[in-house]
Picture 1 (cartoon, helix red, strand yellow):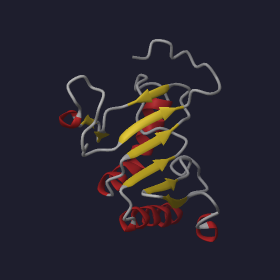
Picture 2 (cartoon, one colour; picture 1 turned 180 degrees about the horizontal axis):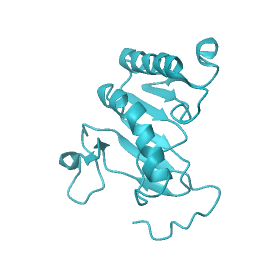
Picture 3 (tube, helix red, strand yellow; picture 1 turned 90 degrees about the horizontal axis):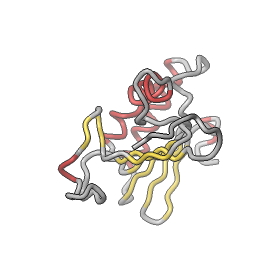
Picture 4 (spheres, helix red, strand yellow; picture 1 turned 30 degrees about the vertical axis):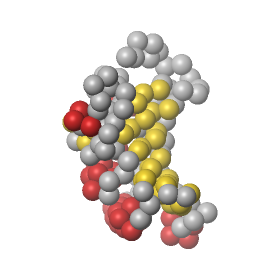
Length: 155
């Protein structure tokens, strides 16, 4: 595993052609074993890793989503998502990450490019299907495998 000695295999990055992939542990904001010193070490690594990449595309993937469309009272899309955004969102915005892929919620959702709760609608074409030079990352929740959680009316 890349970065094995420093990260205990909990985060790493690699390049394939012109894409820089970053895998991060989404449990860091939730587990008590990750104290402030560990979180600082991790966020410093993440900032440095993303900033030094010269690849055209930056993709971050993790388990829990930053954004999802269930009600804010739903744990996954409320409390959990807020913790994820508080730890990661500013870092990935500044580093110009293009795409964030998550699971955890057993549904499929693709969001417009978004940052700090605001969608970048200026980059979306008139029928809402193509993003042209978005200034924010595009988030996808692809947790379709597994348990049916009752999200039948997602639009």
